[in-house]
Image 1 (cartoon, helix red, strand yellow):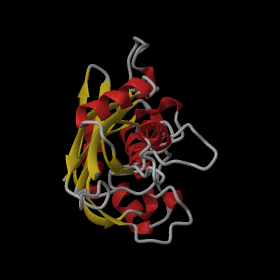
Image 2 (image 1 turned 180 degrees about the vertical axis):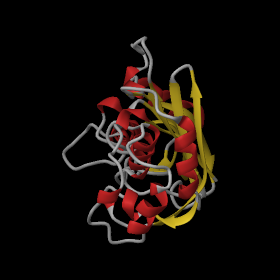
Image 3 (image 1 turned 30 degrees about the vertical axis):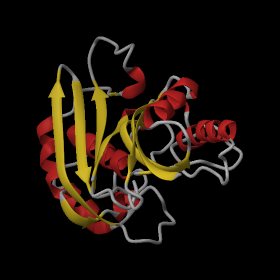
Length: 252
């Protein structure tokens, strides 16, 4: 019987080219999971059509996730626990299916998401973060957190974030809503938290790059409003490295 399954997935995106499958390339998260599910259904004689795993979003190359929600329709004789166990047995060690359950036929991981929480992590200190280095942006000096918090206030609300869009050919609306931005610092580790209803390509990484430039005194906190109004990518800061970004959860 064809059922809709909801999955909660975590992954280290360091060696992958992003979430979304790409023709002729097997180094994507979606592609890896679909390949294992296809193998499972083929062994059961149940592979009637290509497996289509729908994710809550499309993380870029090198970006990580602790709570990517996805859904997929499967006709399998295995129980939910057996499907999850099969996935975790054959998936690479840097991809984990943390939960899997049957959900309503109408559930859609992308269209039904009402919010997403992302975290971006940076570090400055004398001691090298040897074991965390793949998940942090290493800073040359400590930025002023209060200056960044002040600048971040201009980013909250429903706004046109075209200046922070990494796709120069973007034709669709660049209006989005950011509900909350938190910037926390502890022992040299700075974490940016962004919660909103959706984000443009590279948006968070460009916002982080701009905030860091403000924190390092290269721009003023008041510049953020001008950058937003410009609707011009060249007016914003640099795109922070992918490794510091992690999708924490989706809200439904």
